[in-house]
Length: 550
Image (cartoon, rainbow, N blue to C red; front, side, top):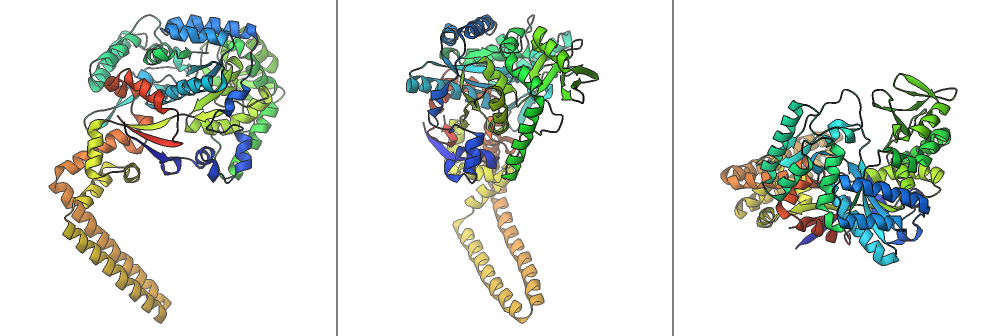
């Protein structure tokens, strides 16, 4: 299998912070980056300082995970890994929102990286490392998770269950059938359409099994069952920490966010200033009165942000609480308090013996801010490692790329099928026409440069006028090239067809494939061989974006 590697600097959408974090040789702010990210993104130095948990904590954690793994249809390999966690193993953790039908390809890439890093760390350190997937079931952005994008013949089709929530409820607990006859009909038709797009077979059957309109099938449970099944042979431990038991284990982080709110805010505001002063961006806006917590309303279940007020008060929605009242809720109903994006990894690592977290680009940016929360709450910062970033190229598309000699930077630069078809049309022009256009263009540039220089010497105003006129002439010359390329596209219909297929499947809607196309699209084609392939390539000898020719 052919594998190509592209540096992060060439990949569209790479932020300056991510680029510098992943490329130590290019670090303009090396001292600051070492402060924000104490561990290197590659190598295995992170295996040396895995936190220890008490035996009682591990017993409770393992019991909760074993109970939950039955809901997710966990395999014997998953149960064995939970037992390893009980007896002293470390965890390599990743996570994602509970998106419909598993969400985009990047979900599979995250899991594959966690599995591979756990395998390699076990060998490198001699200590067992277990892959754990954290379901972000407490988020309340329903629109973000109620969708999956799959390629149709000429466009990307977005499927939705169109679930309704009158309040901002945690999405993980929403029933996949909407708890109504109309919702069940919608669920059935959506699964049917997904099956048509990916092709009938084992993956379509798995979707039907995981997203069946059974009593109690929630978005979190369906998502967890899907992931546990896809990565069954690797013993992936899937966990949903929204229950009371897990919140009791993580209460230390929640308590610190209440009692140390002011000092945490000061530290976060300082870190935001550091980031922006260094030319980077703060992923999460932190404002005075900012809190790291959400509170579930005791009556409606709505997830509302907690904001600090004056005189030791907090506000969530229309209600006001004292610090004492919040601590009382934490003691009696800890599941009502949930962390925001900056506290979530700290809450996670209060519960788990996390050796490293596998993160996507946005999460890596979060960690630059979360580091100050880690330091104050846990006295350490969990290493963050980049997930595998990859584009998967199916054989038919590989032939198209080869026939037109298309490289991925050209695809990313083109952005649209029209622009790529123009490039293919320019390449398809007769050699003689290319020579004549090139000669005419070069001659035009030479004469215009000489004329502009001469007229500028006569008068600056004449020189400026010559420059303006020259630009107009060059524009017309470029327009002539575009027209010639367009003629080739019209004459050879396959050029546009090929450009459309390439962009639709490899750079859909101007975004990396991994961020748009559902992972089930590839699972349906390559079955159990796909997880193995991704795990194999997640070793990341390529510190950048990989293109895997399947």
